Image: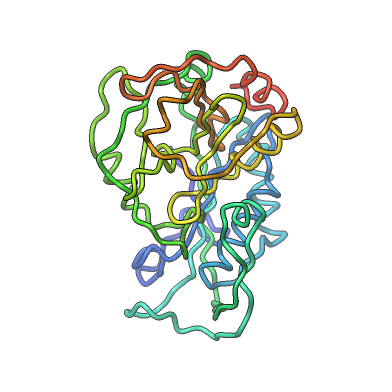
Length: 298
């Protein structure tokens, strides 16, 4: 049974006027617990803090929340902890009844790499951010995915282009709901997702990397998609291992030039892709080393 806490209280009800419920006005992170500790917890916190700022509300992890998460991790040594933040309780309309102040939008290094420039914006400060914590089991098939690789198919759903939201793991996930509403073939495990210009963005649940000649390419997330925490960790590890990494547009037609493909997220870490539609790929010998270096092996 899933365990849920709202603002630190177990099984507390969500206010029906919460803006996360009404408008998807929030963001979230899914964090892997490995041997009683949340992996890359500070990177998750930084991503949530800056994502909230880009959405226009201020949030920092409190000492009480941090203690709660670490306590839950010790009690659930190999699990998934989800932290969801909303702007809080608001009125009927789209506009939030909050205090506003002039400030600069802060972008993390991954966002700057995607071509998003820092700019001046009106940011809003909510009175009470809602914090929802839940504990879940990590799917058992992820271990098999790491060991054998997966096949993915091309989704008919295209992602809309919205640079104001690009990169943020916000709560408006209806595109992903539509993608997942179509059943996969029995031999296929995930969907490949493009934007309206047929550029590859991600899989339905993960960021994606392509090895083309001597370069490793991951699509830039300037107009659509999620800049995942594990994506950034893997990029840093690849650079440390001496590989060249490019963050740029990757048109679907370029798939024919790819030799290896892999996907990343915070729960399954890194998984090789052995086929996309009818195109097959070999598994790179060094992806297992990345899993070892980052303690991602399940």
